[in-house]
Amino acid sequence: MNAQLQAFNDNSATTLSYNGAAIRVNDDKLNLTDMWRAADSDPSRKPAEWLRSADAQKFCLFLADSLNVEISHLLEIGKGRTGTTAAHWQVGMAYAKYLSPEFHMWCNTVVRERMEGTTTSPTDIHQQLNDPTALRGLLLTYSEKVIALEHQIEEAKPKLDALDRIAQADGTMCITNAAKVLQMRPKDLFAWLAQNGWTYKRPGSAAWLGYQSKTAQGLLEHKTTTVWRGDGSEKVTEQVRITAKGLTRLATIIKPAIAEVK
Image (tube, rainbow, N blue to C red; front, side, top):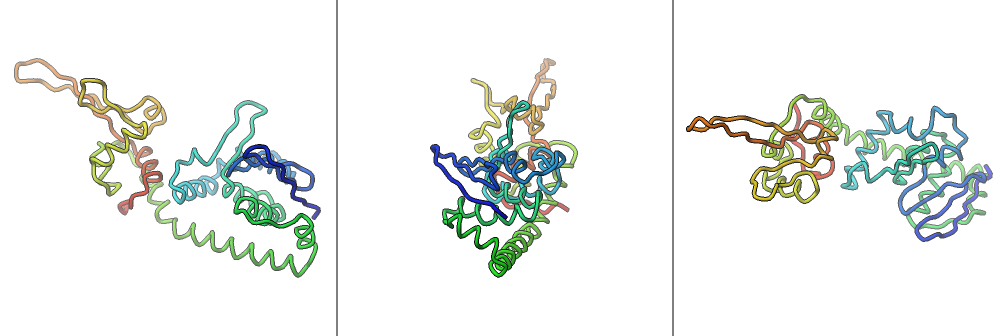
C-alpha cells in the first residue's frame, strides 16, 4: 500500500495524504468527505448516508456523552453541492472502519499519531505496511483496540437503550419533574437551562419561557392554561415543559446519573 503522510501547517489546518488523495484536518476534526474520496468508495457510503445509520448515531451519542458535549459539536455539515462534512477525529476513525479495513488500518496509524501528538516518518509507515511481521503486529493492535472500543460501547448500551426509551416516550414534563429524572436539584436544572440558552424570563415576569430555537427543535414545549379567579375574571398562565427528546438531549450533555427506565 503506497500511503504516505504529508503535513503542512496552515494555522490549525493540516492535510494528510492517502495514496495521493488529500484529507483535510482542522483542529480535532477530519474531513469525512475527503476520507470517502480517498478510500474510493461508492456513493452509497458517503458521510451523510453513514451518519443516518443507527450505528453511527449511537457511536456519536456515546462519544458526545464521553466528551461531555452536544453531538452538534462533533460534526460540521457543509451546505450546498460543494459542501463537505467534517467530524471529530474519533468519529472519523469509526467512519474509516466502515469504508474499508485497509483504509481504517492506515487511519489507525497515521491519523491517531497526528491527533495524539506522536510521530512516525512516512518511510517507517511504508516499511511497516510492507513487512508481513510488522503488518501482523499492526493488525493485532488494531484488533485489540476494536475489541476494547466494542467493550466500551457494550458497557454503555444499557444507558443508550434507556435514552432511546426516553426519546420515544410520549408527553412532556415540567422542569421540576425533569430534574428528578436527571437526578439533580430542580434549582440547578433551572439555572443550567437559563445559562445555556434554553429558557429565559421576560422583564417583570416570573414565568420561564423557552427560546424559539429549542421549541423549533422539539426540545421544549409551552403549555397554556386558563384559570378563573374568585372575582370571575380569567387568568392565562404559561409553563415551559421539556419533551422526551429534550430530556434525552439534557441527559447526554449534563451527564448526571440517569434514573433507571423501567
